[in-house]
Image 1 (cartoon, rainbow, N blue to C red):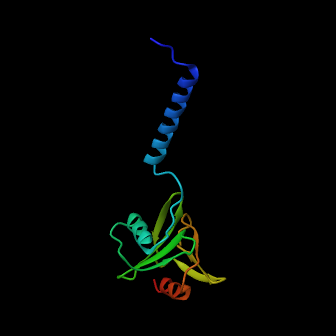
Image 2 (image 1 turned 90 degrees about the vertical axis):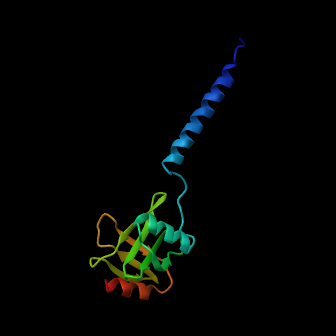
Image 3 (image 1 turned 180 degrees about the vertical axis):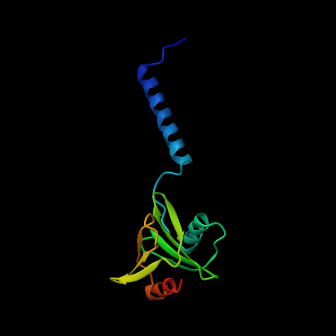
Length: 133
């Protein structure tokens, strides 16, 4: 049996460890942050956050980090970046919204979810819709 050079063994071991870690990261869905770069991406993230939610109106943050989605029942789902995924909250009567420097600031009413800033078109219409909840 031939001797395997130690450098080759070290290289093979390092490569194996890298592939193992990449596989773990892939299985945990770790990686680059997703962006809501289209209405379809926002709809998909909304469906992941709240099963059965079918939006008829979408307002995406220009940076792709958050969105508001409204369904035909008038419910509004707020999405925000949470690691490499999006966290969603169905807004209720505790939610509030205001406009600052042209951006919509939405407070879900849940301390743990926090406040979300969205640079969207027609922030007044969304502010008013949230006020009607």
